[in-house]
Image (tube, rainbow, N blue to C red):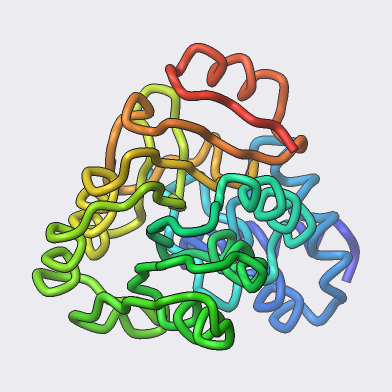
Length: 254
């Protein structure tokens, strides 16, 4: 298949279903994931498709479609590790912290084993599994309705746990970040949980890789004025950086 035919096939597939992972496109078209990534960059640069967390989305749809947990976990791993390492310095002994669901927050959770007498509250099953390995961490799991295929909980019972606590610090994630619209989510499922987490912490730190910028998703969670600090990778574009500089949050580039 020629490059032109391959690019046309990719556009047709993505426009038909709205969102595709790199792996799905490689399997469908019969080429390598490296080739697909280069093709996605070409299509994105030409304004024909949009690179998003986990893969690529159609520009014929008004909002992005949510990538799977598996797709997210394989995206921007180096950047997420830098963000997590930077966030670690804000985790202190003898404190209470909230860990939101999300792959970047999960990366942070894997680094917490050396923190003494830490109490962590989360609603994410993978984060719970990671933290359960550390004997010096007291762990609280906020259960509720299971969000299948994502390994986290939502709903009244989950929100009620966060409503009853007060934490020193919350480390949160988002599906999209907009200077105008704030932090955003693909669905309504976890909106109430995230909003309650923000209310329940003295300080809110957003861990966000650069691919979350310039993506429009379905629901706004909170304005950027509710976020104390944003930690984001150095891959952020100059235009996105300029747009965020006066958002009211401390911006940390790593």
